[in-house]
Length: 255
Ligand SMILES: Cc1cc2nc3c(=O)[nH]c(=O)nc-3n(C[C@H](O)[C@H](O)[C@H](O)COP(=O)(O)O)c2cc1C
Image 1 (cartoon, rainbow, N blue to C red):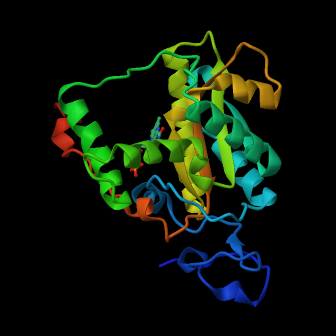
Image 2: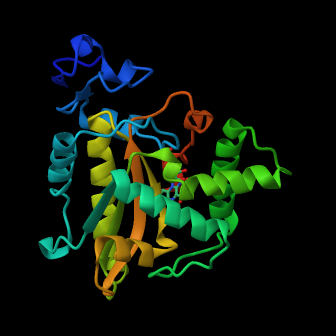
């Protein structure tokens, strides 16, 4: 299926398809060129909530973010700001996010958001949570299990990297749209390089921690985080599959 791949060779395993590798010890290799066409990236991307500890090499990271810069935006304003935390920086942030969440510190998000969905939207929200909880072995009455699932967000799902996406706080919904388009461009590019991801609205909870870490001024608002790295296939949550509505529930065609 995957042809003409170029690998970042670290040892004689160079001919092994990286997408097939179960373990990812430091002597294996990662793709430095995209390994799939666009439609495959769109259809195979899923939210991944458990990662191997190995980092994405910096040269691959830069390549991926360079490609994502091609995302379109209102008047080409390119309003997105991406703050990538790895290594010690990521660990410190993870510790701080987790401590706040565990201590029940109320969030201070920069942007308002819908906290409760109704009707069809609520049904889909519940189905999505149930799909995840089923894979994690969390039953309906398992309050502790549900708390554990929420906590995994604040552990960044053990990802070696997390990117926080933001923009000027005064920009409204129309410009947030540009950042959303950028986010998906980024995640699809990652997918094409064999890098898995999970968009996380939950990472808007404590934006001050991101501003402190990256020494940002108060005008920079944080919209979401994206945990990313190489999927750990042993993590139960990663078997989660979500479904989509039939086309006619979302799209209307008229001649
Ligand atoms: C903007 C946005 C925010 C999200 N926030 C979270 C989150 O905080 N935690 C989480 O586990 N998943 C989060 N997700 C992942 C969604 O649950 C997931 O995209 C959806 O269930 C569809 O599944 P799929 O990504 O596997 O196709 C988010 C996705 C998006 C696009």
